[in-house]
Image 1 (spheres, rainbow, N blue to C red):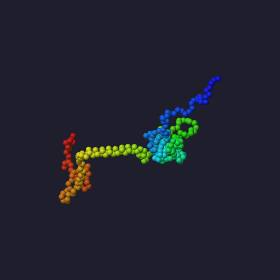
Image 2: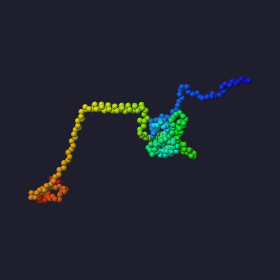
Image 3: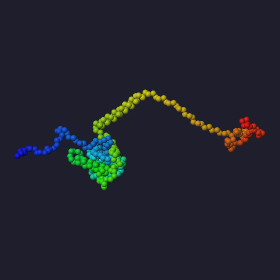
Image 4: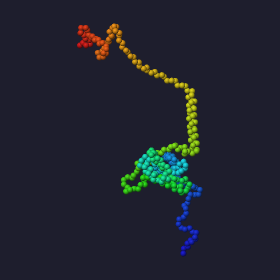
Length: 294
């Protein structure tokens, strides 16, 4: 016979059971962030909602975690620069938003803003108190935002027939920057902390003091400066003077009017007497000039 261990406290054969070994006591567990930090190209605010982190992105748009001035949380879906310039993509975005439940759409911009990217704020999301309900509401809002952007991209449309030819691709898929946005009024005073506001005030006061000091130094340097002599006077040409000559008629009985010889081609006035000018000798013969002789 073979002796066997029949003790009731003997451990069973096989892999050990129980929870896996965790981190040592005193070391906090690693917490994954809910989203990625914003980039300089991301808008700081859309509508009444301040954007905090990025939750996701594709060629059609971006998902942001946001909150308004009252602390209400939301998920903002915003179109990219390329999709916002496509009229058909904008129509698909509006249609997808209209199909959502009315209580899920917290705010959106006007569809008539052709130069701006469309966005929608989805919720409601209660304050994160560590409960599963708050987490579920945030996940539902994220899922609705993904559905809106997928409707724009049309990546969930079922395939009809067999795949033939090249794959379909939108002409704007490479333009993945966030779309154009407008912020009014300017958001920067509201996001500053008290310390930042104090630093901004001190910076403005320092600039004002430097400008006043510069103006005072300039006044000290140039207050006793001699006056600049006036430049040379440039004489101007006198205006041309017009002299009008009026012909006079001699009184009767004083003699005949004076005549002057006229050239063969000069005109003769109608009222002046024509006096023939004799040429040559009285006998009619003329002596040729020495240069005309052969």
